[in-house]
Image (tube, rainbow, N blue to C red):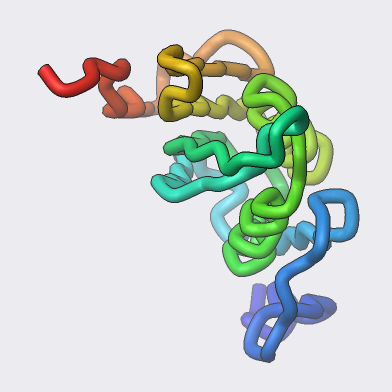
Length: 155
């Protein structure tokens, strides 16, 4: 599979692209997996994810970790970055943001397996951690722990 085949049709990679105004407007793009005959895990970490509280409009912050076992498709990383950035102007609860990101990626990529961990920083004194996955964790592929400790405050 040539690079021309893999990258043909991408609309954002290699050019100036504005941040989408909302997750619904964001274009998530996929490319053919050139290693589709091999089972492997992919991890994306977004330690500075931001969205808005739908009630107060105040910013909410999370450390997201997305793991998946690709099938035929890989997510194009610039489109993922723009998609995640589009949440900066989006008001939704932590649970909705985390699960909707996981579901949209699973729908787009049709991976063998996908999970997302949303480790949200406290608001109102309570951190909320949200976890979603498409099914049981595969046993025969190395998938490291997400490595984000639960919130411990200052001490």
